[in-house]
Image (cartoon, rainbow, N blue to C red; front, side, top):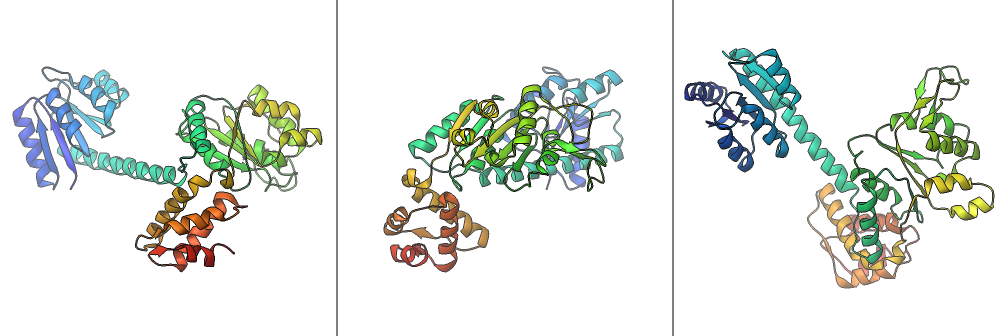
Length: 384
């Protein structure tokens, strides 16, 4: 049952609205002034707030500003002394809608219904965002991981470019995601480009887009990933595999914050934060003339190296427990756990595939074992 707060200094209006809304199967609380309303909102959760503008002690617009500091509940302003200017000001300050007195009952009920729909969507978005955030949670307490977390905390709020290095499966994408999620661009797009998976003849079209007819299969105009990531973050994964011609264009885009589509003649301004990652030693690639030194220095403003799993074996029990809990929840299995011998044996494995391999092994153990996972289980199913 949706809960509504009615805030009005006139007892008759509060009583009438409460009676009508309770008849419509809503749960209703009321407050006689702004101060009382703020206390209720701080201590309870409401789905919609009906807020009068002209009240003693505290003006309704002031109450609105205070509510929006700690709550995203839709607020519908109501007033018998309103003007167009008042309505516009209320909407600008963040009100969901404005209704003049005397209240039109049908309009009021429709507005409440629409506000409830918005409230539901906001809550669903929060849950989805939390689920996505948990998916990219950085797990571990080793000194190496603690140092990376501290670096992310310092670097994320800036627009500094970051170059992430490390072996395959160590979690370079995870670091990039965290940098984005904790940045001022978190609500804008995170666009990932796997430079190793795109043929060299298509990489420029993918990054910068193309105009219709610019090549045989260009049957319509396409925005590139630089444009799609505008306002957000562009993650160039495996940048060490990018062709030299594409590297030159990326360098120009980073220098000028402008791009040009393939087959285009007009420069397009872009506002993106570029994060790059590679499992290659780019200094060796520079010596071999396969990577541009000037691009390396453009990207390597903040270097972050992600250690292999063998460099952080103290994190293996924490990671194994984390993955086990995830798999049990996702597959509806009762909780499972590792004994100490199982952890000891997991630490003995040479994890060439790093965290990705550990995750696969834990999933295998979750499927093939029940309850407690022993050292013998690890020898049987993991040490292969």
